[in-house]
Length: 370
Image (cartoon, rainbow, N blue to C red; front, side, top):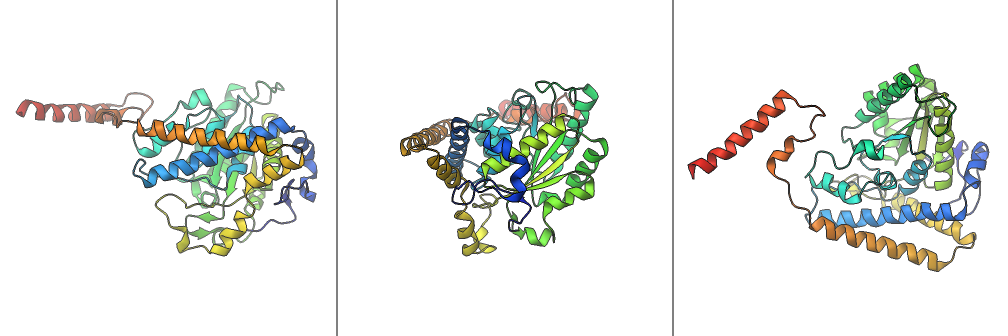
């Protein structure tokens, strides 16, 4: 789906300050970001791409069971993640690597998860960043339920910006057709929960184009649920930040949920087991590659006086990060088999405990026979 007149955009594809008419209500938030802050945004985007490239290489070399690339979607993630406050809780799908790193998650913990050596990967309470969910759309229900809990706890709409909480949930254009996602939106609107749903429209639900899923822009679906919907140029980190920040502030103040559709593109494959050349054209890929979110922000910062030496420093940092991730990935050892029973449920479960005892007895029987 192409950008339309209602799309919020602050920076053009070549990095010029060129706000769309729809951006007017959000310009104060977008232009209130200073150069050091924007350099921090670029740093996060550059680091995420370096991590993405290195993880893809590790998967091809047999060190990961699967890799889920986020290449091309960095601005949609970095802008929205920085729009949150520390007390907010984030529910990711499974591609939000930039958001995870911004929330302090060690990228090697993401590697462990996709290597298949852990059921979790990080402490979701410590980081206020929940675990990845590969069951499409199911986490949106968790996000709405969590937000209802915030209301019961009286942790929203108190008027204290350092206390009021909101919940941010990410999902893709494919998940927008899932029953779970629609039920989450219904409950969120019905109970006016402090939710903001970020729909990363990367134009492909695996091999199905977004035009097959919806005859109208996805953000317009929000009206049917009784909540505002905003479409953003998802490759514009300023626009994504400003709109998400405005919707989160609204949710914390008791204004209810909102849907933010970020128009972006999945440059890489859906996962490392996918071959996108089977279903999309080289021309389409080239067109979106010209809208690279990293190059866009870099060009804007250059126009604000940031020199090449600063960009070179960020690139060197990213190279060091990638090298460190490779080194630590190669040091990962496969866990003992009984660890598969850990972290399946929060509280002990008799069936799981019985299975663990059976496995222990089974393995012990081999030792006795020898």
